[in-house]
Amino acid sequence: MSRAGQALRTSYLVACVAGVAFFVLSVALLGVWPARVLDAQTAAMAPEKPLEPTTSEKRGRAVYAREGCAYCHTQQIRYLHADMARFGAPTLAWETRRDTPHLWGTRRIGPDLSRVGGARSLDWHYAHLYAPRAIVASSVMPGYPALFDGAPDRPRQDARDLVAYLDSLGRARELAGPEGEARAKEGCNCPDDEMQQMAFEGALNAHPARAIRTLESAPSLAGGDLARGQALYGRHCANCHGATGAGDGPGARYLVPAPARLAEHSYTTARLAEVLWHGVAGSAMPAWRDHSTEDRAALARAVQALSAPRPEPEVPAHLVALGRDVYAANCAQCHGVDGDGRGSAAAKLAMAPANFTAQRLSLTEAVRVLREGVHGSPMAPWTTRLTDAERLAAAHYVRSLFRATPPATEAR
Ligand code: HEC
Ligand code: HEC
Ligand code: HEC
Image (cartoon, rainbow, N blue to C red):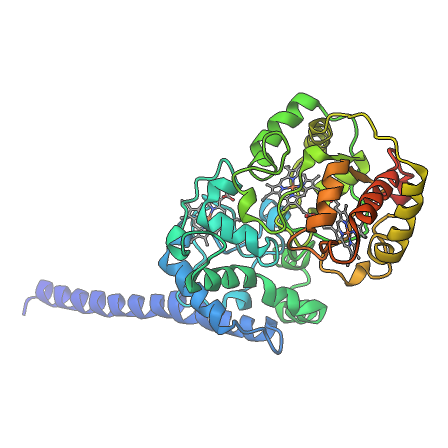
């Protein structure tokens, strides 16, 4: 064989061996090694007894995959301040260790869902899945009426499972508690890695709509711009509360408890500051913390403008006395002796009792609530326990507790 032929042969051999070697190397480097690093990291950082999904949640996950929710929603909070401010702590590997195939998604047409667990009420989820635009006017999310039996309050098993799954997102990490976080931090072993440390900074769940029941006070609001508030109200609130505040928006009939009839209420600005910051825990009323202080002040103005001032009825003295007695005997344990919503039983209730010092209902609305109760809340109808006259007296009495400008310390 000529020398040239020999050289060619050797180069074929070298190319062949190099090709195979590169293939093996890339499989090891890109396939095997990262998986081992991730497994080790997961083992080191996962809590000792991570919360496992229930059967219903597993089925819901399959529905989520089948319906293609991942085409519009991510389930991955990145190590970016913008992501963390909006949704909470970045996703750790162990949180999605059961995700095969994973549902992280790559496009955010809708918001990230990895911390949506506990952020929305059941009725909100069902109504939103059935007809998104009944709840969020500008939504581009498609409806999924096939998961229901003709109405949002008749979810099929698939819808129940799907919502159970949504409600479980982010919960395992939250329930792992401070011990879980401490373990993850230790397992990370990265005190000097600024980016890794981000996983343990700030709030675990910063979902902006998450309603929080707390006595912590909210940033105060004053001097809102009415025109701006009305525009915002039309965009964000009218779907539930109705364009005129009559509680009759397109989403209202699906929600339990129903959206408040804002036009029948006067609220102090302090009370609205609390409601817009914290939402109403136990109802579909979201928190609006992601809106600027100016926007929330404008919204508060717009809500106050919904109820026209009306002439106050004269209340006969005997009615006031009767009302006080009825209230002390039946209402004070929840609504508080002074009507500030802090009765002895209040903390045990699923929903906070109304604070009458900061909000006043119209007389007809108060009489209606006492007759019908607030369906879906601990406030029961009082038709069997109280006579018509006693309910009327109680309605007058709770209205009299309103203080237009309550001392700052007593604002709830
Ligand atoms: C075409 C894109 C698209 C698809 C597909 C889609 N969504 Fe959405 N989704 C959105 C958008 C946009 C929003 C924000 C507006 C709104 O709340 O409706 C949203 C909002 C949501 C929210 C509220 C999130 C929050 O943080 O408040 C949930 C929950 C949700 N979607 C669940 C689902 C589920 C479950 C599916 C599959 C059955 C799904 N979405 C399919 C676009 C989509
Ligand atoms: C998804 C539906 C929904 C949307 C959107 C919504 N609300 Fe509500 N809101 C409710 C429900 C339900 C309640 C009733 C809670 C209850 O029974 O206490 C409520 C209650 C309220 C209350 C009364 C709270 C109280 O303690 O009496 C105010 C004030 C209020 N909402 C203002 C707003 C404003 C302002 C917006 C827009 C930025 C808004 N809501 C958007 C559903 C909604
Ligand atoms: C078991 C505790 C409990 C008792 C007892 C109770 N309430 Fe309530 N009440 C509540 C809760 C909780 C709410 C808030 C419901 C909501 O936010 O939708 C409420 C709401 C109300 C409202 C509506 C407030 C609004 O702005 O829409 C009125 C009026 C009211 N209660 C009056 C009374 C009167 C009068 C009595 C006594 C006859 C009474 N309640 C007894 C728990 C109670």
